[in-house]
Length: 82
Image (cartoon, rainbow, N blue to C red; front, side, top):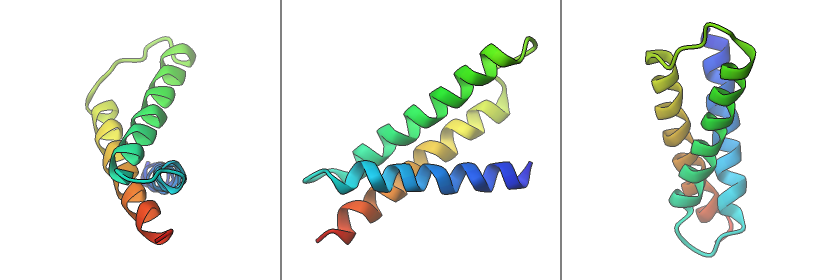
């Protein structure tokens, strides 16, 4: 489970970075949106694949980590291009 979480965080930071790299400002917002989209897609895949899927604390944790990681990636992405 730890490897999955770390992989998810790295992926969402990269997604936030990439989303904010093309923006002129508000990189954190673009990063958060990318992280949120990433988490929603993962939850939707889990919902369709697993018959017993429930939106529980691990789903909420994933959502929080994705939003935070995306925001961090967005901040990094907007500041590196300057």
